[in-house]
Amino acid sequence: MALIDRSILLIGECMIELSPLQGGEFKSGFAGDTFNTAWYLRRKMRDAWNVGYFTAVGDDHWSAEMLRFFAGAGVDTRDVVTVAGRSPGLYIVRLEKGERSFSYWRSNSAARAMMDDKEQFERSLEGKGVIFFSGITLAILSPENRDRFIAALAQARLKGSLIAFDPNVRPHLWESSDVMRSTISKAGEVADIVLPSFEDEHTHFGDKSSEETIRRYATEPGKVIVVKNGGHEVVTQSSQGDLSFWAPAKVENPVDTTAAGDAFNAGFLASYLEDENIPDAVACGGALAAKVISKLGALVD
Ligand SMILES: Nc1ncnc2c1ncn2[C@@H]1O[C@H](COP(=O)(O)OP(=O)(O)O)[C@@H](O)[C@H]1O
Ligand SMILES: [Mg+2]
Image 1: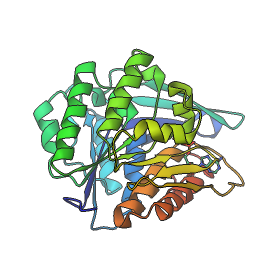
Image 2: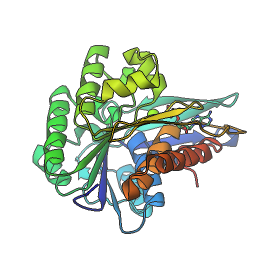
Image 3: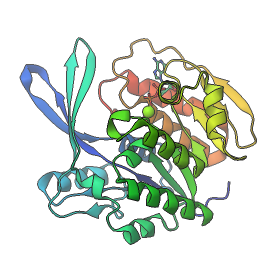
Image 4: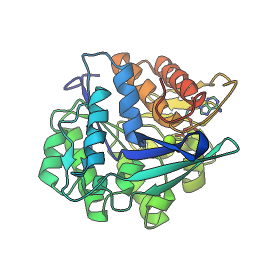
């Protein structure tokens, strides 16, 4: 795979995370699907790679803290847009009998305005070796901006960028299931690497097997499709069209599956982008995901 540059730009929304401590106290952190992948990628990839994040932040204290957090994690912030008067989205974690649930305040977050300056967005894509986004990235955009987003990615692909996409299907973020399905399908068409989770695809697209998910996203030859499935087999199709299967090792003490898929994506891409070896890349993604689900929180050491 001849990449035009050893850089990967991830696009999406990072939020403030408040998670419970003992005694009714909370601690703050930062997380969000594509950002989690960026954070793990930065740790997994060699220094020769640049890992950058594209999003919008506001001009308040928490936006500045978020940028400091990105930079502290080694994630390049040069493409982050600032939108005056806005703030980052927020979610609060509730822990009850070991089950985590989430409440979100993100409907007017700065990230939703990340494409308000379309030229700036397109400039950010220029020359990037790899561009990664998810169904959540699309869900938070306006309908017009979703079309522009997909068109800009198609352009970037023509100019040589490799496009990677995790559908991360979240119906509550979309105005309708039909718009969600058609937008996610269009996004899949412009991607070279698609990383869906079978559970999502089964529930919202009706796929009966991971192979069916692969066939649906394999809209042209040469795509790599990687279907995750919780504790079950990961099924992949290589760019040559060969299927392969990988069973995750049993995780003895799964504490918190938050960000399992995001971490898997990072482990997979970090390995695949080096040598295009699918079995090694799946094992690398699975090993990182296994580590993440045996600890509490989205971003774990
Ligand atoms: N119970 C589990 N046991 C072992 N591995 C798991 C388990 N749940 C998740 N994983 C690992 O995390 C990956 C992603 O999990 P999955 O639940 O499919 O994604 P998502 O978090 O996006 O829903 C799986 O492919 C697997 O490698
Ligand atoms: Mg996922």
